[in-house]
Every structure is written in structure tokens, then in C-alpha cells.
Length: 300
Image 1: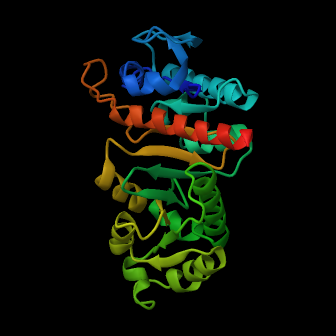
Image 2: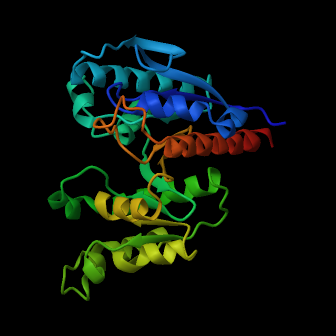
Image 3: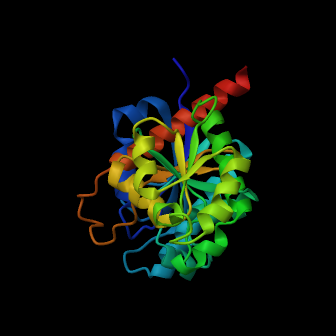
């Protein structure tokens, strides 16, 4: 029987549903069979942390919650970089609280990149679809300037390596989603797809760019292993419509796997006992699979 994967699991924002979905996920027999967890977070939540980063009281502020969430991420990263765990799974954080707590990052992906000195990309993955973002948390007006040949080339290289090393796909087929409607329609709706995206796709070995209203359907039909989306909402909308509750956020480009559920803190239902753990379960199982694949590769 294969050894269980050692994984650090952060509790996220203690005001949200993170502690609840972690607690529920760790009782799932599938998780118990493959994972040796180390829970990292504050005490005072509904699940005891194996590594305590501070105390949480229900009268705490958003800044307190953000600080504790940030401390847990830092500790989990140290565990992974030291080899104490093979990967990390992160429960949802609140970006405003994180900033108020002293961590000026738009989200986990950017924070992990800074903590590790890595070039990373965000992937949302499910059995039906994999979507990678060339740009992440930006105002829509800033996207055209950010979708550069360099950004596309970096996303393509990191995605190809991740699909090969972490997902076991030897020759990944990756498509590029267009920026403009109908890929610009020959320049009628913008020329970025012809002048920027198409040359970048050819240079990086990507298919496309293809119109957003068809490329994700083609990927779900099996034509592509992943789609690189030029901006956040076009990619996130596709994957969440296709697989909400069962998709997993995977940070590609790190030396260790990091996954998380595909939902947020859900502050409105926290403490009611109704949060569904399916995406957290999938995140833990996906992390365990990647850790297992990496361990097997090192043993060869």
C-alpha cells in the first residue's frame, strides 16, 4: 500500500467556511485513505490546528482574520519548502482582510509567487475542463496592456510543464482563448488577437487564438488538455459553469503542489453548518495525486 501524502492544510479566513469544510473533508474516507494532514491555522475555530499561528475570537476584526490567514500561508509554505510536507491545500481567504492584516497581495497565487520567488500561473481544473489565466486579478481596462507576448509565453511554458509533471500528460495540447469577441473578426472588434495573441501562440506552440464562445466547448469535448484565458472572468466563468463545486484551483510553477477549492469564504453562511465540502475534498485529493506522482518520479 502506498504511503499517504503528507499535506499541510490551512484554515483560511477564520470568519468564513474554511474551518468547516476542512473539518468535513478530513472525515471523508477517500481523504483519510491517502492523506496525512497537518492543519495550520488559529485556535478558536471548530477544528483544532496541528500548528497554531495565533488565537481567533469571534469578536475579531477583518484585519485580525487576514493576519491569521496570512501567517498560516507563510507557515505552510515553509513546511513545503523544507520537505516536511509534500504539498499544501489552502482554504479560502478574504482579499480585503488579507490586505488589512498586512499582506498586500491580490490573492493566494500572487502571495505564493512572492514567498517562493517563483513565476506562477493559476489553473482551475476539473475532470471536464482545465483553464489557466494569463493575467489574474486586474481591472478589465488594464487587461489589453497586460496580455503581452511575454505573459502568454510564460503561461504556456508553465502550463505545459505542469500538465506533464503534475498531471502526467506527455504532450499537452493547449489552446489560447482570444481577447476580443470572435477573435477580433479581422480587426473589426480590436486587432490584439491578430497582432499580439496569434504571433505569441505560434511562438509558444499553442493552438489559436480561438473565440471564447467556442474554445472551452472544444476543450470539454477533448480537443485540448487546457485553455489559456487572457483574463480572469472569461476563464473563471467557463470553468465554474462547467464544474462549480468540483473544480480545483492549482498553482502551477511552484516546486510543490498547492491546491484550493473553487469557492470563496462564503461569510454569509459561515457558522451555520451548511457549507458543502466537495470542492475541498477534490482539492485535497488532487494535491495528494500530484504529491504521489512527484514522489514516484523522484524514486525512478
